Image (cartoon, rainbow, N blue to C red; front, side, top):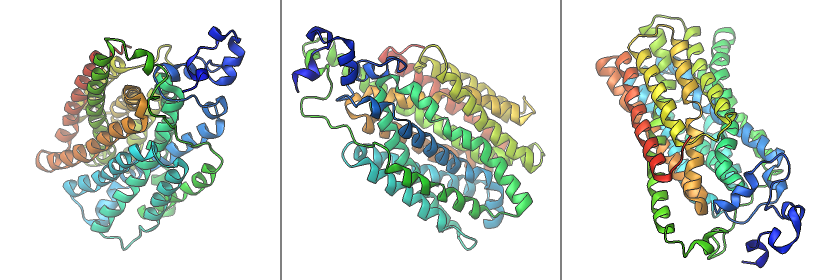
Length: 444
């Protein structure tokens, strides 16, 4: 590594302006994000144009809008799909789980590849997978074919999500959690609007469920075109140069313990993402039927409840991003505990207004996932893509297992009990977040 990469600017007497041009100090308006990249060892500095590129931020937000649309489309069309294919709760839960299975496969596959292969090619290819799978859906699609296509849709979406997460984490280091809160807000923004649009199109225009998926797939065409105008170069780490501070820290007797703590923290974060994504997926899949059948409301109220949940996620995500302190694992534990109480109250009928209970749960859970993803990346700064892939992959595994278990439980004991049981998964999230907080000393 060159002397320039190791020696602080001030020690060479060149002043802060030279350091800002070299990317070691933040220019006014960027805060400490650029500086922190070096502290956490996220590799060589990117230029300021890469870090603060509005096109990169724009395509990231737009991609998460498309991602959120895909996440909520199945739940918004669940009743129609059930009628068209004559599905029970267990079949519906398995079908919804296939999307999460695909997400997990895509995230796990993208994690290591995003650190090694050209990211633009990975992003474009994964968008193409989503586009192709959605266009194959139609009136003749069978249940088995739909299972396979849902996996393909999830795979493509999970893949490009992970590529974007790795880019943001490398650029902003420990401050990536706050940046991800805003970028990830694109997903709940779409998800709180799409169910109402789908219901309106179905009632007013007679739009079929598969047509809505085709439209969601076509959204990815402009994303592919925009990708050719965005810097997506992967961080390259030279041997022995995993981080700017690593060489000076080799003699630090505390360093081995810190590395062990990071591994344990990453495991805890993965458990937390497993529980969170599982609950988010199960609520999205089953809450409409709960409102329609158990509570006796119409389709408009069912769509409004899904929108309230994702609208709450959006508001909570933005609120966490605007907080004066950067939220971390302690905040995740507190918010998840409140979410568990609201989900339990909704399932047991203690709160009879579904939009209030489920919307409130979304509000308190809104910031959880992007905070966890940011913590995962900083737990393994020398391989951010791999860490994000592991955390996201475990989340998608939860998105497969929890809805499947919820469907089985609903078939045996009823949907209200199954909804209430989701609070147990959130308590697991609380325990995992507290474990991560204790291992990394992350307080909030």
